[in-house]
Image 1 (cartoon, protein in one colour):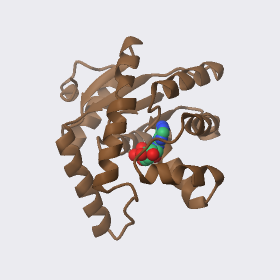
Image 2 (tube, rainbow, N blue to C red; image 1 turned 90 degrees about the horizontal axis):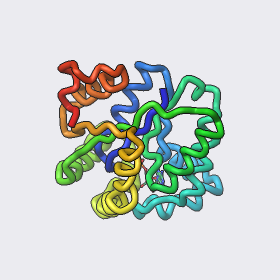
Image 3 (cartoon, rainbow, N blue to C red; image 1 turned 30 degrees about the vertical axis):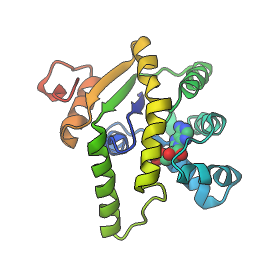
Image 4 (spheres, helix red, strand yellow; image 1 turned 90 degrees about the vertical axis):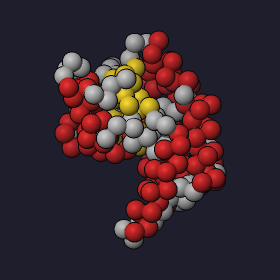
Length: 204
Ligand code: AMP
């Protein structure tokens, strides 16, 4: 099973992807996590990415395309993977399509979580509060200024992907404002091609 999750920062992509990794035993590939790991390793890529990430901008397509291309060749991706936070631009989507074609891999679904932007800001605030309460480290880009920049980058560069995948007949829109369990149920209904059941309540 090879999936892409689309949706603005805070839409719940990571939460839903984690749930699916357990159910389908396939890894969640978060380019954000991979880039943060590169930053903490102090690798060359990390050094190049840190500043732009902290400011809420997008890392160059070449860097992320390369990271994902190498990652999906790893043995744990043989049964599939869930892309979370990639692609984020139309050129990335085209590079992914080329890459998958070369590797003889097929995409099963592109799932977009639609959310209300005002609610997103509140979600980010509570994510920060929960992380602090749990004694964790708050992401350096989880502050209102970077978050606003991430949202505007999303609107400008990532939102056009909806149309791109819709034209290819691959896009499924779900209501990301629904209860977390309802969103999971709707995703599972889509993946099991069981869209007519009550579980698809969150489908738009
Ligand atoms: P995320 O964890 O998905 O919110 O990503 C955190 C940050 O990593 C983003 O704000 C970008 O700076 C960078 N990033 C993650 N994925 C990508 C991508 N596909 N293309 C460009 N930059 C990315």
